[in-house]
Image 1 (cartoon, helix red, strand yellow):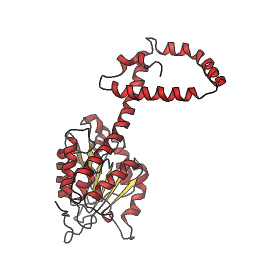
Image 2 (cartoon, helix red, strand yellow):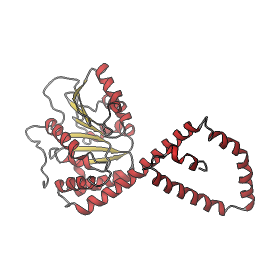
Image 3 (cartoon, helix red, strand yellow):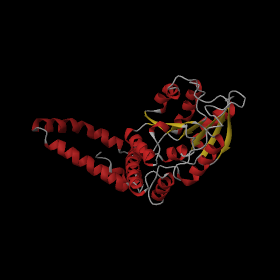
Image 4 (cartoon, helix red, strand yellow):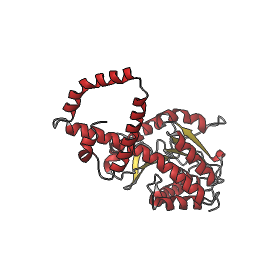
Length: 319
């Protein structure tokens, strides 16, 4: 940490320096507090042990290694900032939506989300992606939907508002506090626990358990007809393969939506290359800058997965 100031100009962007300054100040204050309570013998021992490290620090800050060390610290700081901003964003957004929306009104909840996103960094997919998502949901008419990456609950609300009365959403979120806040937002929008279930775990851990959740009464199920992936893009392909391996995708047709928050083609290159080259049951149906729809079909026919067209209609909840 002592060499951080040396890399200040080379390592950190101007917009990052206030965050770095806070982190650095907190670290030094905690370090000084711990050091003051050490016995004198331990202090002397620490000083003695640190002296041989001076040549190492000198080598590290030499011109030969300066670029590598700068890159390392830049990556570490970027990860820390993303983590801190995510925590602040989710809690701040939840408080804003909870306090300003009309409880029990779906449209009011979504509009309050969008209002917050106009002036603050936001994790919600936004009106543009939300409209594209709604178009797919209306076309697919799923009764069982899976969401990987709950975030603040925005996309969960958008999905639930278009599911039939007997429909069910299972959403997976890795971070427990985020999952708790997102679940509260879903309840604020007027939905009931019988319509959705939140799983707090990684997608890799959750997928093998989903079959039992789809069949609580032991009746046969043909799987999900809609899957929304909005978590780690590096997990999109492994999770798609796991869903197929566990037979959780409706064999008669399942739409898989891949959210591309970075809006860069390379973010989804791995899974799209796999589908174009090797996948027999998958095809790319729609490819937008921010979202890709993959259509999975293993069997032909008109049987719809878990849906009774004569009784299932999209839910209308105080819109």
